[in-house]
Length: 69
Ligand code: FES
Image (tube, rainbow, N blue to C red; front, side, top):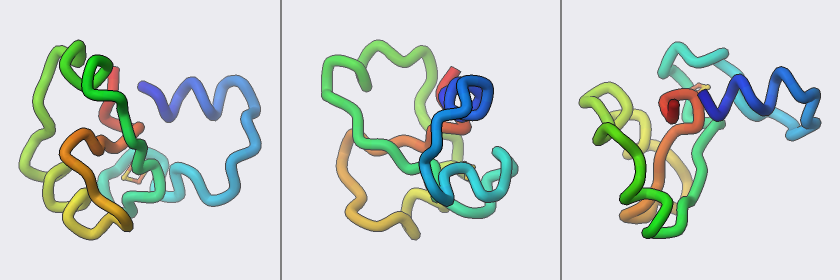
């Protein structure tokens, strides 16, 4: 996942991925370009959509990094 990329490369993004991918935080919220969003193989699941609803600045191309593979 995108979260794995951040963790495995020691990218220091404070607070990113606080729940370690268990879909209970939304700190991994990312804004994608429409073209990148359209290339993702899956739509957000219901649990991801619920967490995205709590995310700051939600856009039509928002996703949670821990769910992007
Ligand atoms: Fe918490 Fe993605 S890391 S929802």
